[in-house]
Every structure is written in C-alpha cells, then in structure tokens.
Length: 445
Image 1 (cartoon, one colour):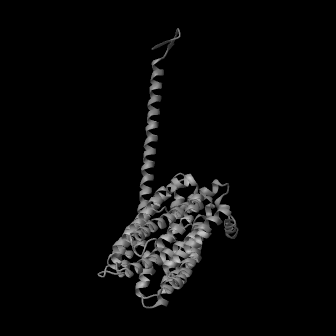
Image 2: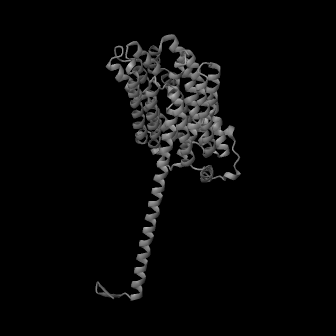
C-alpha cells in the first residue's frame, strides 16, 4: 500500500497494517473495559448511598415516633413543668458524660458498628420500660437515665461511620443523605401526633410503633453500615498517609484531647453547638406545651392534633430543604459561616414561638409554622457543617470521639442548661414570656 505525500512515497507492508489494526482493537477493548469498570463502580457507589439513605430514614423514623413527644407524655402523666424540666435534664447530663466515652471506646477498639448497634438496641429496650413507671417518678427517672446512657453515642457514631466512609467530594453531599432521616422523623412524628391526640389510641401506642420501627432500624444498621474491619483498614490507610505506621503508634489520648480542645476552630464549633443545643432544648421541651395551652385557652382544642401535625410538616420541610442545600451553602459561606448564620437565627425563632399575633389568630399560627421550619433548618445547617468540618480537621484516630464530644456539647452541656433553667424560668414567668425573654437576651448578645 502506498501513501503519496509531498512528493514522497511511503510503503506500508501488510504485516504492519495487521499490527496497527490489532493495536486499535486492543485499545478499544481497554477503553470498553475501563468504561465497564467505571459504570460498575458508579452503580455500586449509588447502591451504597441508597442503603445509607434507607438507614437514616428508618433510624430517625424510630426515634421520631416517640422522643419528640416525651414532654407531652410526661405532662399527661401528671408531672409539673418543673419536674418535666428536671426529667428532661437527665438525658443531656448523662449524654455529656457518656457520649465521649462511647466515642473513645469505639475509636480505641475499632468496633464502631458493634457498639452502634448494641447501644441502640439496649437504649430502645430501656425506653420501652418508661411506659411501666408513669406513676413513679424515681423509677421513671432511673429508666430514663439508663436509656440516655446507652443512646448517648448512637447518633454521633452513626454520623462518624457514614462521613468517614464518604470520599472528600461526597462529604459535601452528607446533608442530602441526612435529609432522609429528617423525612423519616417528619413522617413518624406527624403520624404519631394524630395517634397521641386520638382518645381511641393514646401514648401507649407510640411505644409500640417505636419498638417495631427500632427493630427495622437495627436490620438496616446491620445491612448498610461498613464492617468494623473495613473501618479499621481505612483508619490505618489514613494514618499511613500522614507519615506514620499505625502498628507502631501508641496513642496518647490525654495529649490528643488537650490538642483538640486547644484548637481554636474546634473550640469555637463546640461552643456554637452548645449554645444552639441550649436554646433548642428550651423550645423542644416547652413549645408544644405552650401551643397546647394556647389552643385550650381559646377553645380550639378539637383542631389541635390536626394543626400540630401541620406544624410538624413545616418542621420536616424546613429541615429537608436545608439538608439538601447545606453543601451548596458551605461552598459559598464556608462551614464556619453557615454555623454563625444558624446561631443568628435563634432569636427570631423564640419570638415566633412566643406569638406574634393577637391571641390565637392567623398571624400567630403562621408564626408557629415559620418557627417550626426555622428550628429544623437551623439545626440541619449547623449540624451538617459542624459534622463535616470536625471530621475533616480531626486526627484519624479521633473521628468518633470528637463527633461524640460535639454530641455531648449539644445534648449534654447545651441541653442540660436549657432543660433545667428553661423549666425553672417557665415556672416563674410562663412559657411565652420565657421565650420572649430568651429572644431578647440573644439579640443583646
């Protein structure tokens, strides 16, 4: 075969033509193989992400079917506002102590999945026992304490396992995974609000739904979370990437914790989380009690269940939208910017819950709906940003313990102060006046 170019003749032999053709065929096969591998990896990755979405959905469905109604359940048992505040303070106090211990234990042993599932199962069983002690406050408090001990590290362990399993690019989409938990929580809490306000059912049926849904959540924890061996291998790889051999490293936990707490960014994140935990604790413990009292005062108790369910829909929607767009906001403002913006929203939420209209008019109800949406949105924005940032800046051997310390700052330090002092303030000034007073204090800060 001849190829004439610029007056010269190039002769290509038949053997050369065959070799070129074979090379092209091999190249095409290689590209096809790479495309097939890439497609398989993407399919596997998408399947894994779908499993995580289902895990969050059923986990939050189980907790949302009962935990949000504890204040109402305690009130129906005859406990006073002050007693409710003290009982609700048990969980954050215990969390403040227990959560870091569960995190340290999981980091030290590498058995994150085992500890996650076992503590969640035991906490669910202890929570079921609360229905047996409604007329005995000491036993009720003891059961609540045991529940809190074992549940203290569950959420932080789950978030730590999931975030650590994601690539650096996927971590900004953590909020989109977490929103499925918000969806599960919203559906269950909305349904259970109807059940709790129906005379034919009552609060005892909430415990049944919680038990069944918790069992489903355990199944998905077993199926959807990476194995402990996978987590241990990942930690070793991260440690080697930083220039050390994991087998030769002896962790100085005292020094590691000191370095973490003296890190200005970590300390500021923990402080913001604690402040938010304090304020949201007051709202969670007393906002529905205030709404119920207001509806009774104005003779609208017959539509209470329906309209609180509507408020819960706004609560779920606000959280889901924020979880979905949390990655975009972090790209624009940075994680710390999102955290600051979240804290700045809290005074507005208190004023809305206190009532912006005249009695129980349309403006007041719109304010309740807006407050519900803003409360869940504030938490979602803060928690997503704080979780991702803390995981990024923490040493590989401390991802779970720092996540647990953040949980302790929110549900421990913050919620303890909010529950205890919130109960005392509501008794002294009334719930609505307490909300206004806290809102004014936050604005002055």
